[in-house]
Image (cartoon, rainbow, N blue to C red; front, top):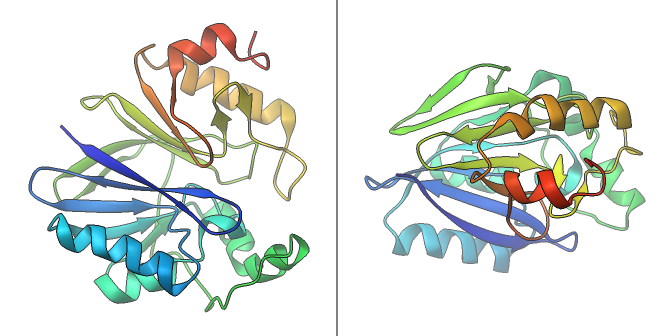
Length: 213
């Protein structure tokens, strides 16, 4: 069974998820740590738990989800993964951030490995099913663990809400279709791990999310 730990980083309060197994293999979703204090918080946990980061993974390319990518990949000598459709967002992340009053020193980032829809992603002892769920961005991805019964969804689905669609790559109809055709087909007990806010479940969102009723 996989375990996970949530960190809330940067002024936009991004959920950074550290997913790991009993052997200490781990992947870090959406490294949002944007200053030295947040970097130390993340690295301290990794050290105390004896974890071995094997990848930094972007659920999508918006600026608030990637400030800590360079820190993670350089400190732990691991690759950066994501979907090629969001590379253009990665390229312009500093400019995006400035529009929201958020600045960070970001080195140019390029995905070291591209992740595709339907892929069974194997990283060390961690295995996740990949779903392409566009609508919040063109390259938004979700990562599902059938055995551990959770799905990391980025900003596609929230507790009682959905991702915004007024940013580059966003489209409302596409987002709703992604949620209904991909995420809502998962078992009701599946824990939803979003990019902001609290955990929820597929079953709860099916019955209470006003955007899906």
